[in-house]
Image (cartoon, rainbow, N blue to C red; front, side, top):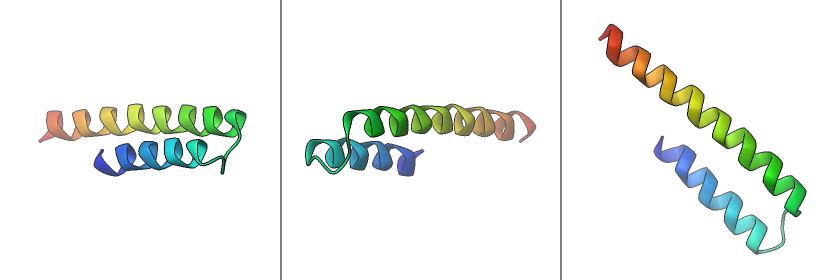
Length: 50
């Protein structure tokens, strides 16, 4: 989860530095949110099976 948060920060930085367009940034941010959801579900499943 820490790596996903770091990726979010880097995407924000890239957008602020105009390395990404607003559209690219929004699309990538949506992908990161989906990955966070999947990781959260996976972690919860591992804890439940634990």
